[in-house]
Image 1 (cartoon, rainbow, N blue to C red):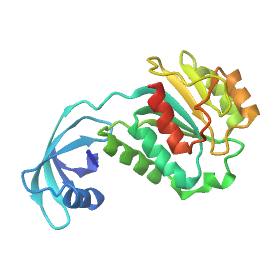
Image 2: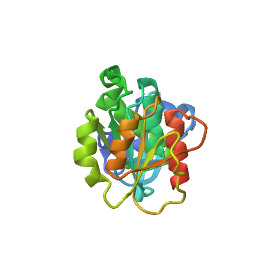
Image 3: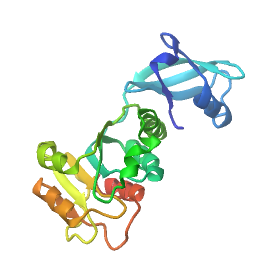
Length: 235
């Protein structure tokens, strides 16, 4: 991890924290921290700064922290992602978070299997864990807004036109004639389908809501690869 994420419950006193478990193990085995070493830290949904190791025990360490830096700005991007299969969800969510996506909507689609919605990877605990991993990788502290939407039609017809208003709305769909724009500077809404792709009727519904179809070329990419590739090209 490139940033040690702190939580309110870690604080022993103002400016002093105690770390145990996963973060302690990482700092000990990967950073090989010793007394007096400084580490990049940040509090979830707050500021970043430096932590100085002041105590190092067998199963915990303590840091004196100074949080005096703002986290990097979010991309002006709403990512609408058809719910990936459970094994892919963790990677896709962590990747989107590390890229700085401001809002993520996990959406149902025809080719999303019903069993995906019952996966334990959709628990709030796991979703939070993957986002925190993405933030730690990217040296960021601000969680994206995350929403799960089970009903495609009502969302696309009733909510999406208002959500995409005043944004560049793009739907990735193999075989579309529109190229992917580059270096976009305005707020953007990007919709990426399931591994089997959107149905033509779903693409048409998104077009009716204000989206324009774009294509990445002849190669068919995995969901997590498509997320990174499209966000990298657009911004």
